[in-house]
Amino acid sequence: MKSNTSRLIDTGTTNNPNGSKDMENGNHKEVPDNANEHCPGTESEDAGKADACAGCPNQEACASAPKGPDPDLVAIAERMATVKHKILILSGKGGVGKSTFSAQLSFALADMDFQVGLLDIDICGPSIPKMLGLEGQEIHQSNLGWSPVYVDSIGVMSIGFMLPDPDDAVIWRGPRKNGIIKQFLKDVYWGELDFLVVDAPPGTSDEHISIVQFLKETGIDGAIIVTTPQQVSLIDVRKEVSFCKKVGIQVLGVVENMSGLSQPLSDFKFLKPSKNGEEEQEDVTERVMAVLREKAPELLDLVACSEVFDSSRGGAARMCVEMGVPFLGKVPLDPRLCKAAEEGKSCFAGDECGVSASALSAIITKLLKNNTLA
Image 1 (spheres, rainbow, N blue to C red):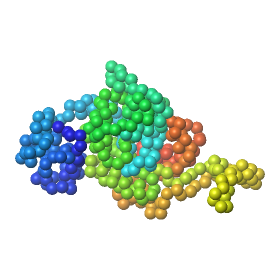
Image 2 (image 1 turned 45 degrees about the horizontal axis):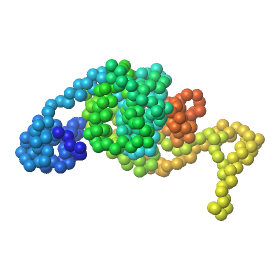
Image 3 (image 1 turned 30 degrees about the vertical axis):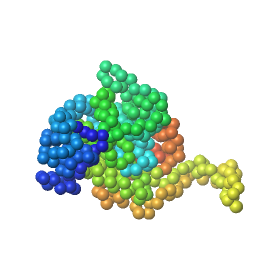
Image 4 (image 1 turned 90 degrees about the vertical axis):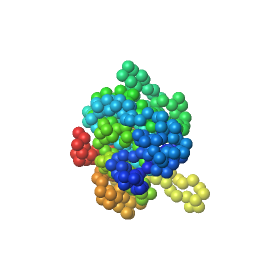
């Protein structure tokens, strides 16, 4: 029986009787935190019966728990049989724009006439409903299962649709998180999909292990990892790449988000610094714009760029060379893209997000061209 707290044993880095490296082949075993040394794992046929189990507080529960394949995996495989491609969107840290990328990737694929599903498994911080303009929507039950919430032909599922109050905190341990992810896969009627985009939480925790476990037999095309240019983010991305390699998930590519501020000059606000630092800065935007319109109107069509994060060490592109994974491209920090995400809109609608939309389009085209996804 699985306890509420368990640790993932990487048998590729610890000694075991067979000298095997199960984790390197995408396998692992669940071991309760209070288990004896050399625990065979709660899902082993020897659980509760091995010599190492003697005296363990979990021995009776493990011995009496049902063994063998999880029957829910069969139900998941049946649901996923109508989904052609499954892509995980990962990040090493929070706040790098992973959910924004997931939402805009879904919008872009839908614009290409693909049938798209977007699954939000960030249980404690579900932001996908906001980013697709679906706040306040609810999940409906049909005779085929739970129905996704739709926007622009994109089927969306998130725990955010199940909270009575959007400000409610989801305070769940691992097993309960795993249970709702399993339900999203086996109880949701996704229908015929070309792509299922899975927006995962930051890091490499229970949710990541679960989604890999549940989908591994149905085929995961791979993962896209989102980062920002600075080293504090790239350090964690390296761990994410390592996780994918250990569990046998292909890294489809890395996206460097917030890669410098790019903004039309006409959108800037100009302030005159105060002399003593105590007075409020004077807004001189109208004066500057008037001069530009009179003296150099052609400058108003320019896009101003500025480095926000330190990328002197090569950023994500250099890291990809060192780690041996594809680099998909850079997306600038675009206030108009941020606004589109806040309003739950596609940045590809119209030409308002020209700077970021073109960068995202290039990345998605490269993704589809370099991988057998189309």
